Length: 341
Image (cartoon, rainbow, N blue to C red; front, side):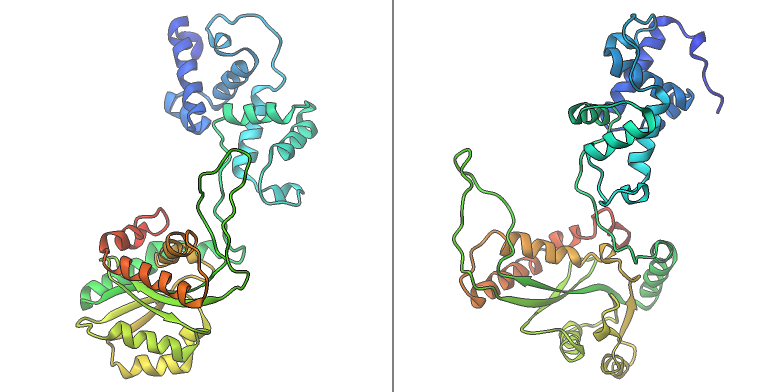
């Protein structure tokens, strides 16, 4: 698309375009997406952001008000935006993987020769539409091409096969929970951190579950580890009463690939088939959200004085979820699990 020439616009129109564009960036839109939609060159948006940073909204008027020149030019703002959004701090020699204002300030000094306070760096990032967020963590061993292949070809093939064979798809996972896990917050007097008294003894239990896009949930609570024998026991529970074949999607846990498990599946004569998620990709498994729900809503907000208290809390929440297929279906609506809905 041909770029617009701002020199051919009347002053009032240009002023409104500048102000609207900067407002959209402040609201969180990517500067380059905003300017592309308007039809101007990429350089324009960073020039306008630099003008705003130096003189506020008045500086965006078509007839600019004189004042001190901006410390950071348009090309500097463009570099800051692309660095923060496109690079990992480890790539630039920092010891941490998360961006901080101090790290960004050091980069600005090194590249632009401009020293900014931490507060000024924070304002700059906000003006570029950037916010401080809790990141999603991924295993560095994860193979992005395998994930893409799973999303674009492997899972669609499994779903088509399940439809053809009238099979039910389930996603399975195991997890452990400890008594000292806690979450949530409570009200208290300002400046006085509240204390919840709990036992100093720690105890835990393991859980296995499987959920379907239709909202079905099967589960089992386990004392001790989850090996091949325990996994087979869960498979027997999963298959109990099933009138349709089951396609079970699991991760690469050794128990799932054991000879005992293979032998059991073969004994079912095609009624149960296992399919494997890409390695190091728990975010693709909707069943992970079952454990998130149990830990945050049953364990993390309660006091547990012994193993039986913990077991009752976990069992109660799992039974609650089992009776709420709508909530189980919602686990397939997260951004990274929606593909499986």
